[in-house]
Length: 200
Image 1 (cartoon, rainbow, N blue to C red):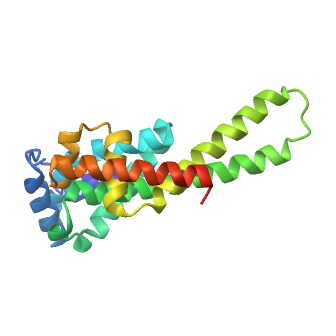
Image 2: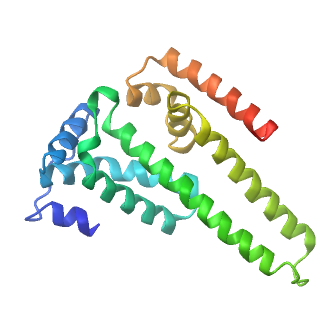
Image 3: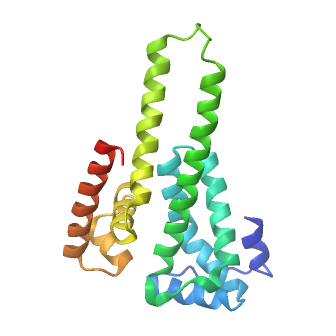
């Protein structure tokens, strides 16, 4: 990422941050204009952002674009980060999920236009086209419902199902007891299922 390399200044890379608190501190310093601190934030969080974007988009090239966009946004808006409201990791993954879902919607809209344009193309079996349309619609509906959940219910699901974290890892990332995480995930899944089933 050019922006990150520029932000690193002389090219010297800081030690990769380990704990969430270290990353939080780096992001706070980045908000004050510390470019090397931002390079540390990038190294610590860009891989997780990329992993989440890949799981949502299922396309590595688009996931890379989303990750770059998110990290640029993090650099430009670092001053909005509030440690008392959550970790830097949470904040960055929330931004990533939002951007990735927006990209899914944009791509789906583009494909829908292509499908309408090619509706008279009889070279492809009807069943194949129908299956693709249904799959895209179901995928879009899940993301719509997920985006509609309250953040405290949405984030554990995103971290577990798209980032691949265990209950314990989700609890650590959110600084929340494991029991609370499990309860919120059950509640979130129940509301997600109700939303998908009712279409509302």
